[in-house]
Amino acid sequence: MTDIKREILGDKDLNVHHHIIVDRGQEPIRIDKFLMSRLEKVSRNRVQKAIELKSVLVNGKAVKSNYKIRPNDEIKIMMMGEPRERQEVQPEDIPLDIVYEDDAVMVINKPAGLVVHPGVGNFTGTLVNALAYYFQEHVLPLLPNNAPDRPGLVHRLDKDTTGLMVIAKTEAAMTHLARQFFNHSIDRTYQALVWGGWEEKEGTIDANIGRHPTDRMQQHVFKDGEEGKRAVTHYKVLRDYFYVSLVECRLETGRTHQIRVHMASKGHPVFNDSRYAGDRIRKGTVYSKYKQFVHNCFAICPRQALHAKSLGFVHPTTQERMLFENDLPQDISALLQKWESYFESRPKAYL
Image (tube, rainbow, N blue to C red):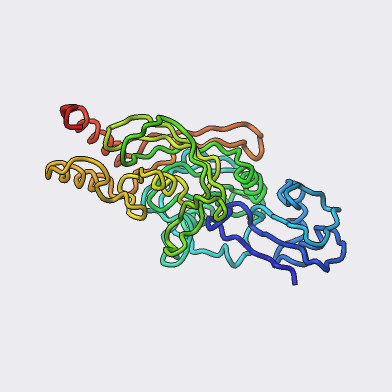
């Protein structure tokens, strides 16, 4: 039997939908026919379209439909659409903040508290439920014969992270965007308020990230480089408040909780990030007034202070380079104003 491992969106590799290691005894056969026999509920047309879009990689390289597979070939397929039973979610009329939309893509501004994808404990009230309703009401009626293209998620934001996300409106767009994420050619910048000041005002964190060995709800930095997957975050300090800092992070890779776990690994957890110990006082004075000030800040922004501020990609249809930017949400803006006032009012001798 061929070993097939299906990566669930957002768990390990965001953009590899199928991962197949060809059996050692496999006879040569065209890759399109091979995939047709191995993948459930996938049409030959869909397989050939994915190959045409160079989204089927064999040993790391795109191939043509007439490629004949060999024993031990490693096949990766990027975002070819999930089986229909996985897509049947309940449409829900949840407001969407749509920044941009055309026939191929949508760019939205995700609010805090919105889970992206249904899962354990969150089967309703998610972004996917909202998109299902939006497509049902506003998109499908306009397509010829109600064509069954469905919205596709090619990346995620954590529940309490705000900011820009791109949504694919067709399978072709989903495949095209997924390839850009896979090739790390998507431009993504975030802003985060983190604990502590930095000696180096800019730099790069290159450290493998994987599931925490004992706490399955957390990710973990593996310093020996032998476990996890490579994760690269470029950072720049925008404002140093001594006890906290506003940092811009540019992602080269897109691992789960990447910024949050990278910042925490450097002793700078994201402010009020309960999962990575940012929801307690990590730096400052022992005075009760300071403690009260920090707790007031936690109340102003009752989540991790992390926002996806800009997003750039090549449009799947026009091939135009597109860049979107948005403002910080109200809670983070208010939080920064609070720290700005505190920093400016304190005698520097006490800092």
